[in-house]
Length: 276
Ligand SMILES: C[S@@+](CC[C@H](N)C(=O)[O-])C[C@H]1O[C@@H](n2cnc3c(N)ncnc32)[C@H](O)[C@@H]1O
Image 1 (tube, helix red, strand yellow):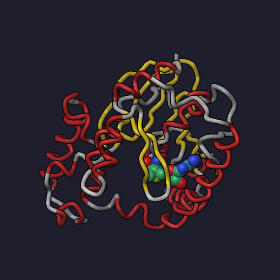
Image 2 (cartoon, helix red, strand yellow):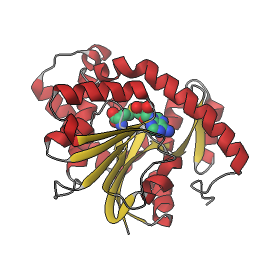
Image 3 (tube, rainbow, N blue to C red):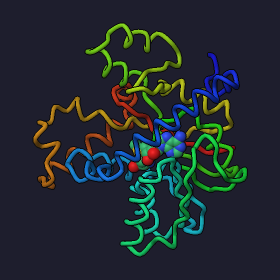
Image 4 (cartoon, rainbow, N blue to C red):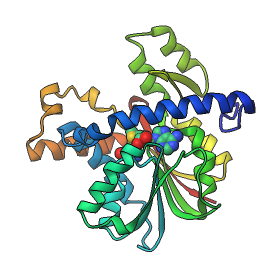
C-alpha cells in the first residue's frame, strides 16, 4: 500500500497547505461562538460522553504527566482534564476557538493549568518526545508524523481519523460515483466543503501507524453511528432528556464503538496507540 504519511512534492504541498490553513482558520474562527452549543443537545452530550469514556481508560496514572490537546478548540477535553488535576498544553490554529477556551478555563479557575498555543498541528512548536499523552481529535491523518514526533517513547496517542466506509455511506446519496471511488482506492480522499481529507479503514489505519512506530492498542468507531439508531431529530436536538434513554443510548454506542462488525459505520475512528 502507498504510504500517505510520506510527504508529497514539496512546493505543491506548501501551496496547498497555506491555502488550506487560511481556510481552516477562517472557518473555525467563524464557528467559535457556536461550537459548544451543539454539545448541549442530546446528540452532542451523548457523543461527548462516548469520547470521554473511551479516553478515560487511557489517561496516564501520573497527574504530572505532560498532555498535549492538539487542535483542541474550545477546550472540550482540556477543561475536564484540568479538573482531574492534569496540566495541559492546548494548541489550535483558530485564535477565536482558543479565546472561547481561555474564557471557560478562566471562569472555572483552571487557566493556570493550561498552556495555550496558537499553532498548526502539522508544524508543532515542541521538541521531540515532549509529551506523555498526545490527543488530536480532528481527523487529520497527515499530521500523524508530527504528533508522533512530540510523543515520548512509551507515551500514548489518541487520534481521530476519517473512517472510509462511514464517509462513503454518507456521500452515496449525493454522489454515488465518488462514494464508490472512495471505497475502491486505498486510502482515499474525499472533499468536505473546499477541503480535502484522507479517509482510512481501521485495517489501513493500523498498518499506517504501525509503520510509524506506534503499537496500536485499539481503534474505536465514533461519531455518526447515531444515524443508524433512527432516533427522532426532535430528541437529538433537545436540550433536556430522559436520563434512562441517555444511558441506553451511550451504552449502545459504546458497545458498537468496540464491535468489529460495526466499525465501518461511523464517520470517525479514534485510534489509541503507544509510541515504541
Ligand atoms: C471539530 S473541532 C475539534 C475541537 C476539539 N478537539 C474537540 O474535540 O472538541 C476541530 C478543531 O481543529 C482545529 N484545527 C483544524 N485544523 C487545524 C490545524 N491544521 N492545526 C491546528 N488546529 C486545527 C480547528 O480550529 C478546530 O478548533
